[in-house]
Amino acid sequence: MSEQLTLTIQLRLEPGCMGPNGKQYIEAFCTQQNQQAWQNSFAVLHVIPRYDKTLPEWEYFLKSKRLNDSQVEAVLTVFNQERQGLEETIEHQIADAVDAFMRDKY
Image (cartoon, rainbow, N blue to C red; front, side, top):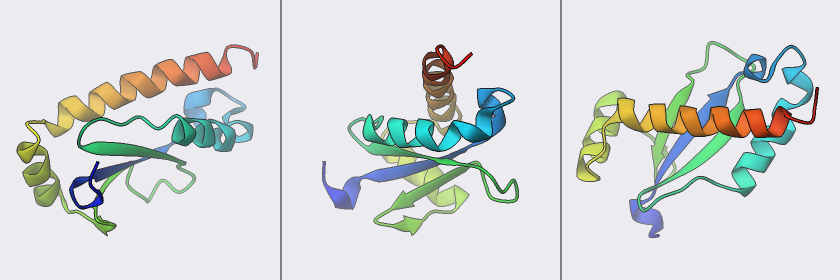
């Protein structure tokens, strides 16, 4: 995958999605997800904890430059992707991964 054409999708994940003790697990979960990086032919996913709710849940980067909403839409159009559908797919995959990760924690 060419660095020039690779879209990086950064997802800030709230510890609360991992249950009442999520704060103690969120860092390890994000590390695990980034080692097993979700990716496809045009994008990689980077998952980080969302401790500050003033920061956006989703951010998109191209060549390390943060994209604004209209730039995101333009880039996704090039790859025949719709933002809402892409984010929903990622959210479902992350939810499944959280369930698997937390299965032996409680």
